[in-house]
Length: 287
Image (cartoon, rainbow, N blue to C red; front, side, top):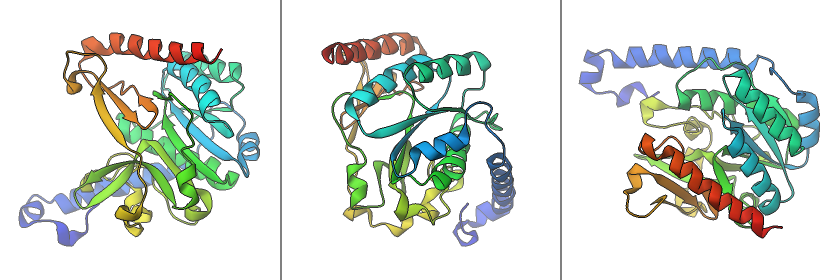
């Protein structure tokens, strides 16, 4: 939350500093309790062993086995040398079972995360990221690690870990006033640069920071943004003749983010079909 000195007279009149403080304590307590919960499926010790000294890509899965299937094939082709972990945050058993089967088919490590205490997507995502950081990444000690949304796909050869050889982190930057943070769906870190820090991949809504923004206090405020390499990104309409806001694709360099939850709902099925055609062409080219 904000420092008390940053609240206005009107904020104090409406008791916002107190309500924000209470909510922040609740969020932190829930986060601490969740970190202690065991996975619902998967072998945590074997995953820690598999990532030690390696580069780790963790995908936070959420009820979309088709996207995981596409992403697994494209990551294997275009981002070689990384261990890809599927950390499943799906709330329903049917989706989790399907995603587990996809991971097994591609020989990827799979963990079904503890039942999430939050229903709001961004908060659910943030606490899932924190569980992976605390229970897998930190004890597993990879050389570098990154987090991906399940609907972002490499469309050509890329090494997103390369920039962290000379800086502590890399990804798509999202500004928020005087602050900034790396989008939680495409962010990468050098382990020895951050393992001693109290990273927090959750939100800091009271400062306008979405999932991943909790790292402003722990990490990002230490970095001169003008000296940091960032991932170029742009939004485009997924088809001609519509506004970007109605059906966006996001390009992050050679990575295509489907942005499944943005745009008009009547376009969702068509946008998924368009994504599928792009993926199919890429996979056909590899044969």
